[in-house]
Image 1 (cartoon, rainbow, N blue to C red):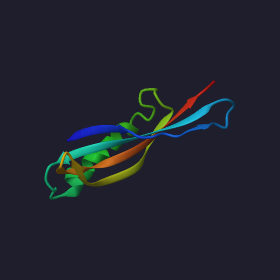
Image 2: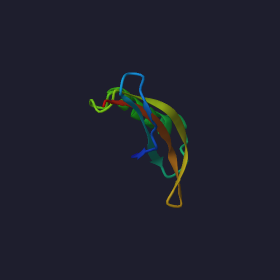
Image 3: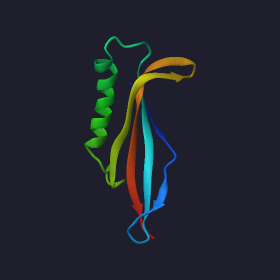
Image 4: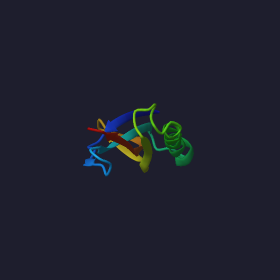
Amino acid sequence: PKAIINAEPSPIAPAEMGGMLDVSVVFSVILVVREYEPKDWFEEVIKVMGDVVDAILANRTLGGKVKDVYPVGFAPGEIKFADKLLFGGIIRFQAVLWFGS
């Protein structure tokens, strides 16, 4: 399997605590597992996607870089890339940061 981490537009809003800013960092992990349709989606695609979620949730601060990270989307399926049809999925995550003034 191959993985691509794709940063997405992330909202920034004033936090409720003083002069802090609440930053929600949104990113997707795009997994390419196979070049042909799997016979068993659960074993060949969904299990690999679950392993990625488990690995990120094992360290929810990403080594102290964020306050918390959690999955917000899980979509196994077909991915069209460079005029090829590939099979894998997209897992979307949201991480929380606070910046003070």
